View 1 (cartoon, one colour):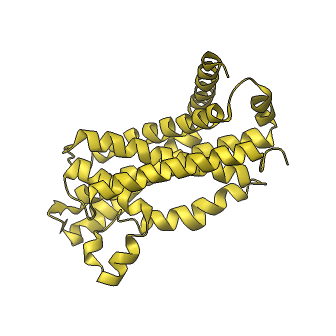
View 2 (spheres, rainbow, N blue to C red):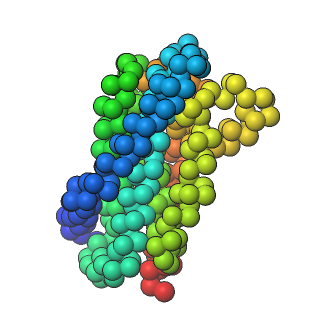
Length: 257
């Protein structure tokens, strides 16, 4: 397969994804910004005053990294699942399959689009957070690497969801019944050190806990988990999910049926 053609194809898919996001910015960028602003006002400002501090930080400051990561995760996932399912629904995916590009290029192009939307919304939420609290990046490399790996993980997960989805309702099942509960139970609003030992161990089975805490460590320098474990889990998820996406594409599941 011609490498040059695949590079052009990947750039084309990414450009299409970004044009799509920016064209309907009222649906893709504004809602998460408003939602996160409400979180900062209600949880951080109003409730946070009663809570006081957590792990030595002002509560608003403590939850800010978690809210930023939550916006990155949900938007990376949502962008890929809606975009690729839309391509299936509109039969655009057939054009990609007959074009001289590899399955990996199709996956990477859509994942890159999801990552860029996640970073765009995450940057906007970070700017909003600065109006409510002070954030100083303790470990810049950790911040950048964790947010990139996390957005890749959930972009790949969104791709798998889109492959199996048969109707528009199917793309909302996983975000509603899986992604949202895992996010809220992923240490965004609290430290798992507050939980009994049994529930601490249960929480450690939640992969989002590692992403949120690793990102919080990058910004605040505090974490409930070991950073090495977080990186290991992120890398494993990237490899496993990308392999699963490639397998689904090769077998034509949900695409050629």
